[in-house]
Length: 344
Image (cartoon, rainbow, N blue to C red; front, side, top):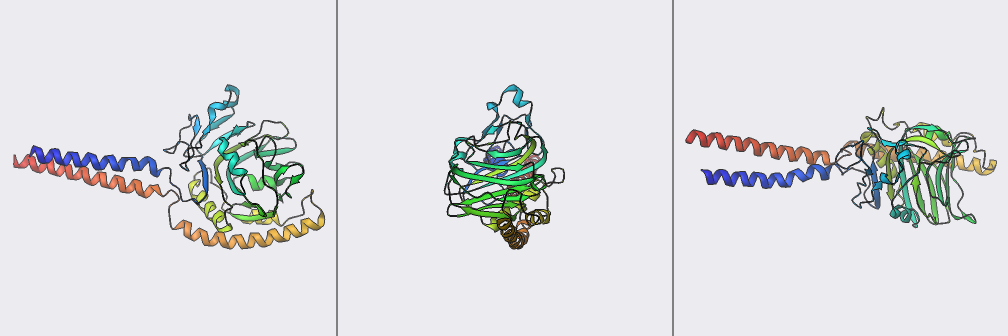
C-alpha cells in the first residue's frame, strides 16, 4: 500500500511540476500579431506574472528580453515616473528603450504602437510622446494647432513628408496610436485601428537612441503609457485593427479602457486642413484619409469578430487547464488515501 501511495504522490508532483510553470508563461501570452514582434510592454502586467507597482523593470513580454530598466532614472525622476494599476505614468521625463529598439526603428520597415491613457499637456510648443535624441523620429502633438504629427528623416536634407492630423489631443488621449513604415512605400498613421493619414516613405531613419516622454518644457506632458509594441515589419491595416481589438479587452478595466469608438479618429482626419500644409495638398490628404478610414473601418469590423471569439490573453485557458489537472490529481489523491485507510 505504501509503495502504491508513494508512486502516486511521485506522479502527482511530476505533473504539478509541468503544470505550474504554465501559469507564469501563459501570463506573457497575448493575441497580438506575433510575426515581426520585437518588443511588447504591457502596462497592467509589467512583470509578465502580474502587476508590481514597485517594479524597477518594465518587462518585455515578446520573449526577446528587451526590458526597460527604470533604475536609469534619478531619485527625482522616480518621483515622476511610476507604475499605476494600468500602466507607467510618466511626467516630463525621458525613459530610454534598450538599444535594440533603435535598431528596429532604423530598419527598412517597422511598426510602433503606443496605448495611452490620460494625457496632460504641458509643453508650450509640442507634446512629444516617442522620440530619438537626434530627432530622426518623433511622434508628437503640435500645441498651437492641436495636430498629431509624425516626423521621420535620415537627416535634415533627407526627410519624409510629415503625416499631420487635426484634433491631436483627442487622438492621443485614451487611444491606441500606430505608426507603420516601409521604405519606398508608405508612412502611415492609425488611431484606434483606423487609418487616418499616410505619406510616402522615401528615407530611412537614423535614430541614435529611442525614448518615450520628454523633459523639455517646450515638449513635455504627463501621460499614462498603457502599452508599447515594436515590430520589424509594416503591419497591414487588418493587423493593426486586430491589435486594437485586443487592446480594448486587455485594458477594458483601465478607467473605461481605450476608446472603442473609431469614428472620432476618422472625423479628425477629414476635418479642416492642417495649418502647416498647403491648401491643395491638405485637401488631397484629407480626401485620402477619409477613404482610408472607411476601408480600415471595414477591416476593423472583420477583425473584431475574430478577436472577440478568442481571449486576448490566451494563457488564461492554460491556467484553467493547469488548475483543473491539479484539482483532479488532488481529489484523486484524497480518494486513494481514504480508500487505503478503509482497507487498513
